Length: 401
Image (cartoon, rainbow, N blue to C red):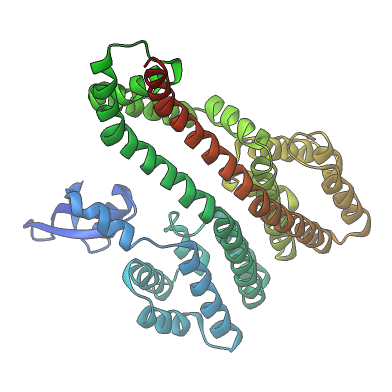
């Protein structure tokens, strides 16, 4: 939620200024008009450097959404009216989540449906979430849909927690290596360089490379920093383009162990979401369209869009999935074919999601086991290079006497 300053006229023609919170300027203007005012201007509030820290602190995490959904589902299943459940949740929620719940409650009390109320918060609720709530309202099974949605969100959080937990150790080791390397380049290597220069002797190639890197870090740090910043900016700008995102995501899938794990994670969430949407009464075509927009990987997103087009033309879903072996494994098209023949698509997709989840869990364990020796080998090579670069000139000097 962002803050906006508005200038407006009331019915008497008096100029009024104030502040509102909204997702964007159009929503802010709508809120001002809802107060019976004529909008003259709406501008975002200037945020100082501390606003970024505050925004991070007050951000709404997937864990917050999962907790909100579980509590909301429990209350609705217990027979509480939606407005009363939201009223209780508003008193319990804190920070930004409390403001969102408060606005949803106000919209529902104003006569809007729950799905329409949460649509006004696209940064909080995904299109999948909104579509499921809407289907639950239309089918009269909102309580059941909310329970399934809460279960799915909690499973996703648990699975992501396992993956992140497996990557914490190697991340700490790599950061430690970088810090040690910088300390060596800034404090140790310059002193050795001055020592070697006094002897006026030819230095070995490893030592020259090390001194060159040290000079780049110390003497030419503005140029080095500028090049690093430019490289990062160029990469991010390239990744924002459709072609760049596709190429980088393709490259991500080709990384040994990590790429396959990333693919399994995406497929687990994809099949779980499709199963949930199918069970809630959302058509498979609409489910494919929505999922293609929320999948983070461009390779799978593009494949899903083509699958949706093929299904729209009348081709079987299994046939459409089979046309994209680069994105979907053969087991997925096989199981989808079974679901189409038996009419149990929800159950089949749920089982496929479980298979992918088990495989992902195994790959996480493999990654955890493999990454420690790999990091140690890399660390050993780095230390070995430093030792050779530092000791070799000393050995050459002593051998001359």
